Length: 579
Ligand code: DGT
Ligand code: CA
Ligand code: CA
Image (cartoon, rainbow, N blue to C red; front, side):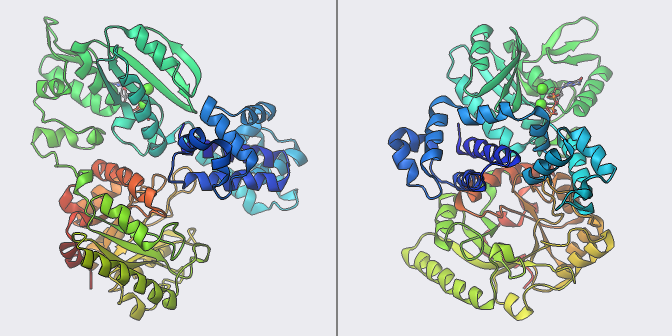
């Protein structure tokens, strides 16, 4: 059980209590606890085991009742209150809570006033404009609800990569402990590092499959055993579907290839096999006529049998990787260790949780040589944006930290001054040029009026790129996976202008952003536009934890170290900035 699971339970409790019209203070207490837990740097389970309720209560925002629940969850993996509430609420209402853009208050209202308790009912009431009759709800809410339902249906059952990957890794860690497990790997979309994951696929080589299946179906957090057999079992673990297959050692490579997919990639490989008189399936590579097995133990066997260079899983989408492998043009994809800095992090100077120095310390521990602290500009009011005076004060702190690193000889580490300047809807930037020109790096981004039409939004971002001080456009499409669609923008045009002006495009590593996405990254590479893989971290743990999702997306976008600006040393990187 990790902190995020506990936060999720408290959020769900808050949601359900709110739908039920419970005491708002209690609702708020659960939400505050969830927010605190999300950004906690220590493992709650460890604290609970060491100091119990008393030590947990020392954490700000965690009172007696919630501390007791944390202990309960740490000990049993479950929370009785949560279970009861989930059981009490009609199933349809629980599902309504999963719709983006629809909050528990709205659900409580429509349930009370119109008796709505399912997505279908909500959809037809919104379409018939029956919701706008309810006090506090209007045409806008109806529109939002319909959009939310559409999004919900599109993403239904899919989880963010950041939810699936740690979960899969902890399953693998558990199962590796078994003597009965000879080999084990992740397959499917998760091995290809797609941004959302339908289900987790795991492959195991074992001579004692029953032991493996017993362990798998009784893992901590299993909510349902959907199927249990000798070669395949399926479970639901903390809301995620997980498949595990046991295969023979001699078929492992073929199975890994087959179950890694994608389906379209597999079809291409099989076709190449047919042309060479081969039959390729999850059991191995066979001569079609004689049925003789000629490979299958290792994944390389499959590629070799059809005359291809090895194709990394992230490229297996039938987007030209087969042709590239035929011509030996598979790129040397960027590796996490090649990054030398992060060009977009926040600190306490705007809405971040850590100080400049705390961010720097973590960056040094990560092996970085620089970070750019890019706190918000004033227009992003909720985020505690910085005006000119505040930027000056922050600068003193940055210089203090840098001077100390120089004196103490902490290697070559440097904190770079930056701002995430808002690109306003009237095309202007939220800070004047004479402020921007003093900064080491200027990051610009859209934070409001996402509904401008495509032409206007394109002009708006182009205007920022044309500013001689703007080095990087952050999260260029503004999407939030499962929550907010990307705004409409002419990406070809943005790439043209980026190239012409020497503006860098960000790949924001936040798992719900991954913006630019894989396809846009590849487009940037084709246009000769450089990418900055940044985190947009609001605390030091995030900086450390989310970068791998950015790197994964860059790999899916065919990027190599040379395509990424923050693989350069500080001085080489600076040469690639504008001025
Ligand atoms: P997901 O789970 O929706 O995120 O996506 P995948 O790619 O993990 O899909 P999944 O779990 O249904 O199947 C895992 C892999 O197994 C898939 O990527 C390719 C392979 N596979 C599944 N069904 C078929 C099929 O009918 N034909 C072929 N060629 N491969 C398949
Ligand atoms: Ca899958
Ligand atoms: Ca599957």
